[in-house]
Length: 177
Image 1 (cartoon, rainbow, N blue to C red):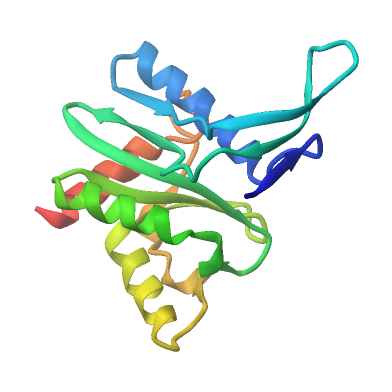
Image 2 (image 1 turned 60 degrees about the vertical axis):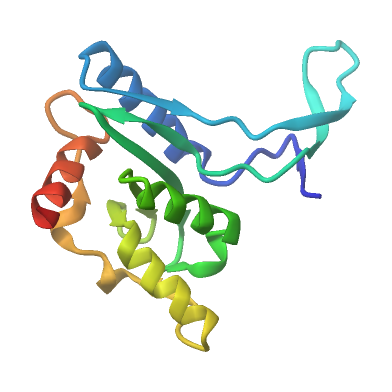
């Protein structure tokens, strides 16, 4: 089982930005997106009893977020990389399986990816993720290069939204009709 300690989880700043954006989406009735917590069992608690200092994961989670956007079911995971590519090993098999099942039920699955090297955010559709993932299992490239991220799916701050990914989701939806 994986362990978590007080150093925190990687990608937290990206998730904080997404959470703030999701709050605004909810306030404006544009979407209802929920952060899915990873179930943990505390092992050690601080002396004052207010903080968990060591815990283990009870089971694997699915994706970071799930919800609905104007009647469209969506699920996605947030990934952050300091590299100029997104390592495939940052995406777990159970996440791929969940996103694949979700997509087969006519939901939209995707990743929101932050490239620290470029200070850029992207929407990565599940079909592209799946191509790279499957290829990596068959001896192909073990990462998704920055060049594979379509610039029309780049995410910007816009109209008071910290990370306006619904705008980019809309762009994606217009390409699959």
